[in-house]
Amino acid sequence: MRKLLLLWLLLPLCAFAQGRDLPDFTELVEKQGPAVVNISTTQNVREQAKGPQMPNLDEDDPFYEFFRRFAPQNPGPGQNPHGFTNRSLGSGFIISADGYLLTNAHVVDGADEITVRLTDKREFKAKVIGADKRTDVALIKIEAAGLPVVKLGDPNKLKVGEWVLAIGSPFGFDNTVTAGIVSGKGRSLPQENLVPFIQTDAAVNPGNSGGPLFNLRGEVVGINSQIYSRTGGYMGLSFAIPIDLALDVQSQLRSTGRVSRGRIGVVIQEVTKELADSFGLAKPQGALVNAVEKGGPADKAGVEVSDIIMKFDGKTVASSSDLPRIVGATRPGSKVGLQVWRKGSPKDLTVTVAEIPADKTASRESKGAKPTEVAANRLGLVLSELSEEQRKEMKLASGLVVDEVRGHPRADIRKGDIILALIHKGNNTDAKSVAQFNKVLNAIGKSDTFTLHMRRGESQSFVTIKGVNDK
Image 1 (cartoon, rainbow, N blue to C red):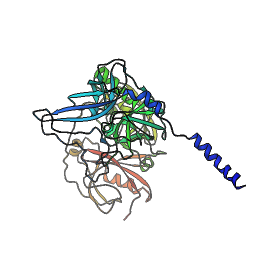
Image 2: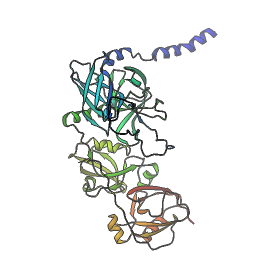
Image 3: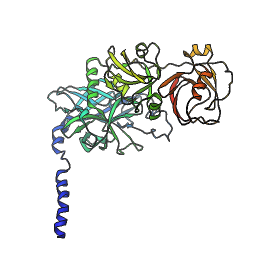
């Protein structure tokens, strides 16, 4: 009886094991591996080389070593009489039989010479057709014919948990194969808001940059581009550029040598649960507008500060990170529909998309007269109204200056901040006078959540406050 019981218990496990065999990647590698190449570059440095350029972050910041580019830079003495030769390694893959290849922009950035080596040991000199640093995609060309070509897939059909395979040249070891699963999709990375990265746990290391990420059907679904690492090596978090985005970039690079992207001229922030409650939204979604460029496309379309952009060109904006990608992928000059959430209800607008210009910086300083002090309100804030000169200089219709912060207002509010509006239960009240603002504030329940639209220096943001501490 015990033997029968044991057999009965083991049968489901055996059936499960037979139905859950690990995948065999050998056929995929045999067919697709020859289309994956090793890329080596040299750069003649004629002056003292600078070290890797890191973001301006403290060493203790969790993002200090976030997402190192993994084309290793190995400066050393060379034949250059005026300096030294800088060498780096990377990967790439062939997308057309006549010699077009995709790789990362950072693999070929600044290279004086690019050498592509195939699995059959043939070597070719390559030229850069175009590179887009914003997405880290580069299109290069070698003079050859009849080359093996990868199959291209649809990254939108990828599912979290699905097996994927990376092929590349980590540390110069050609055609190295590593496998893992899709760990996440649509990842937004620091300073990378145009790419919805595919996150995987396939092991990638320096030299894998620019190599393909395959699904089990042998189709390229991404370009391995970045890793999370505090050591410079693999730590279980790898990120790939979706191939559909890369193909759109390469198409523009091939035809015009540059990439054109749309813009509408807004500054946005994420909609938190607290902000959603303040604006009367059922759930956190969309992109909250905290500044509109004067005379820009959004301004002309009628977009206002405190609007929440819910849809753009028929596409749902689930989070604020979605909007730059959707707008960026829209061709400049296009007229598209825009749906915003304004004062508790949706509103449809039409915007003409402009083109992202060359990077530029604008600065503006505001000087104001010393405000007249008034009593602290329920938030412990001493406020005063902007002078006419201040309003003109800052181009504001109204606003209240925080002259003093007494106690703990339960939010990041500082002296010198400007309160532009108060939002409570979907009602947006502009801060026109101290008396009017305090009257609205006094009507808020002690446990209510509300939001202040603030300006600090040149930046605007929405600050949510949970409850009011009455004195």
